[in-house]
Length: 436
Image 1 (cartoon, rainbow, N blue to C red):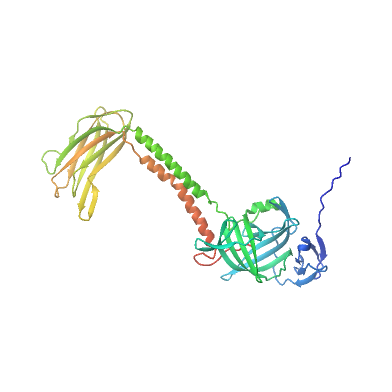
Image 2: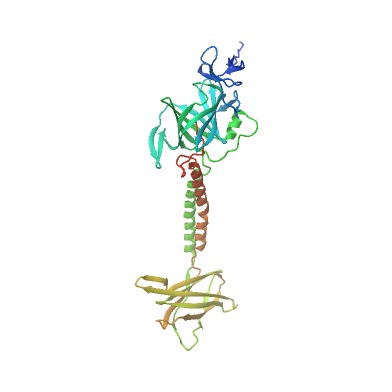
């Protein structure tokens, strides 16, 4: 039994002649097309009648060449669309005009879609039938659609400057609509109001490279300039993820610090009380009895605890190895003042000497103080071996703060730059284009 292979039917566009200049005009949207623009003289023609009728003649001076040619076909979400129409639209702000391009896409089974491009920023747009619900978010007007909140970005009067191709609505040069844009990057909801009719559309931000690949265009897409209203932030979600990682790293850091604290011997090897009398005739400096530092090279903490009151004292120390003569010289100043308004300083102090080898040691102590209202000071010297030190862990914790703080600042800067182009900018001026 023979098998018959049926090739898919290819629907060809209808071709007629322009009544103004005689140039051939193709209609790709079939019965959906109401207006078509002659590619030669740019006259707007009525495509709803068997013979095209001239509705408007082009009065402008500039012929704009679309970046994506009419008739080009590209696939989005598995559906092949053909470019059948092109508009250049503009808004005026503070005497300046900001223009963007819109491409009308058509598929016989899926209907119409749109591509918009402003300064290298692209959106894939479709008209929606659902109506968003008005609300407020962050002190701004907002709408909610399908559980997603879109914040108001800008409102403007949009002017059609140039048209080419065919359209399923009555299009004219100089048409105006009132547009309101609401954003939830990478999405944008837009409403266009004209003649008492409001149309809502939903756009999704698409990289220019993806557009070029879909239509297999030559060269590269136009470079992006600035930050667009619904452009996804490159830092979106990263800052919170990094803060979450920072939190767990700090938990791990605390656990490691606790382990080191528990494993440190923290052994007291020397402790003795002394009295220093101001103005005594004998030499105030002295050396302590020997004490032994055991184990691997580790730190040594020396603490001084005094009964100072409204005075200061200075202690010059030297930790000396009895066998090798190696010494560690250091000094500590202790001051403590108190009155009816509060206190300042502390009567106690300590110092940590890192990596002291094991062996027998003694201290050389040279105290001094100012007379004032105290003639003497009692003080205690305590020496401990292998005390837990958390300096490294504090430094590590501070260093771990750098990535989340950096990403948070970058993310905030990106969003600030985005909203500077909105109706909510500090200067209250809009410098960016709109979407469909």
